[in-house]
Amino acid sequence: MKSYKIVTLGCKVNAYESQAVKELLNQNGYYECKEEPADIIIVNTCAVTKVGANKSLQKIHSLSKENPQSIRVVMGCFAELGAQKLIDNGEADIVLGTADKGKIIERLEEYQNKSCKSVSQMMKRDREYECLKIQKFEDNTRAFLKIQDGCDNFCSYCIIPFTRGKSRSRDPQSVIDEVKRLINNGYNEIVVTGIDTASYGKDLGNIDFVTLLKRILDENPTLKRLRISSIEASQINEQLIDLIVSDPRICRHLHIPLQSGSSSVLKRMNRKYDTEEFFSRIKEVKTRIPNIALACDVIVGFPQESEEEFEETIQFIKKCGFAFLHVFPYSIRPGTRAAKMEGQIAPQIKKDRVHRLLALGKELEREYQKRFDGESLEVLIEEYDEKKKAYRGLTSNYLEVYVKSDECLLGRFIKTTYHVPNEEK
Image (cartoon, one colour):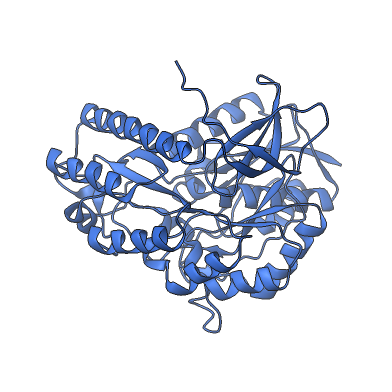
């Protein structure tokens, strides 16, 4: 038997894929080692932003230096961008990229038998969906469910279509089977995720995202909660809204990437909407589902973004009334169209705009929280917070709640009166 340690950076899809790799290793005689040194060190990397790429590289550097005798495996989006370089620099023995994680056992056996370093075939846009499977999510009361991979949008700032390939969907029966496994293993909330999640089915022809969600719900009546990880505004249609309205098991929480509240910036970003179209979808959702929590991603300091365009973003966000903001400074990704654009914004200006939007985000979150002060809400308890000496959980609409109890509440649904958290001093 050989021990392994896996480090995961980045998104929910990476978390899912790392869990699938763990289970493959466990099923083939390997065992996870929480403490170093381990015989095999695996880094599942991220490249969506420059910060993510730098963190990935730093982690590869440090683990390679600290574990010179270990077999070093690098996989994920960052691996796609510099696979051979990682091998040539002596920082990786096996590189899997984003397409061949399921071949990790085969690659490890090849390396151990022949001691030859290897690079799996890197992503080609015509690759088929690689169907990884999981039984559980360790140390968690909710599980991620990967249904889709890749992206066809080619936003001008984004490297992901090049590292993940074309949009492709998982077989629907495989999805249903995994939902059943996760429910049987005690998970009360399942988070549906992918790279462009709601593009699910467009390559299959006989099913779409809403139809899949309906199948999941109809064929699994004991499922307590189904959460959508992220969805583009253009993918929110009447059928999806109708389904959310009709089935309370779908969480009252949608994460909708905005990226900018200026139509001129959105055009330079090659987004597939303008602010008028975006607001029309938001208005419809909030009208039909009044208490829903809407979160969005915003990129500030995109090339040529003027102060006037940034102010448009501030005012548009206020108009939409988001509950949560996720703010990122624009990050140059070599190989994308935006990296070659003139008018790159100075770091200090980006930093200032990030701080201004984060302050607005806190105000909006506070306003949303106040709407539920004193109400009785159902919370799924996820963990015990040692510092607060209380159990922490989330409501359907993504409000964080702490519950004190002498009995173990992990994994349980608890009805409790919600109180707005004290503001941090």
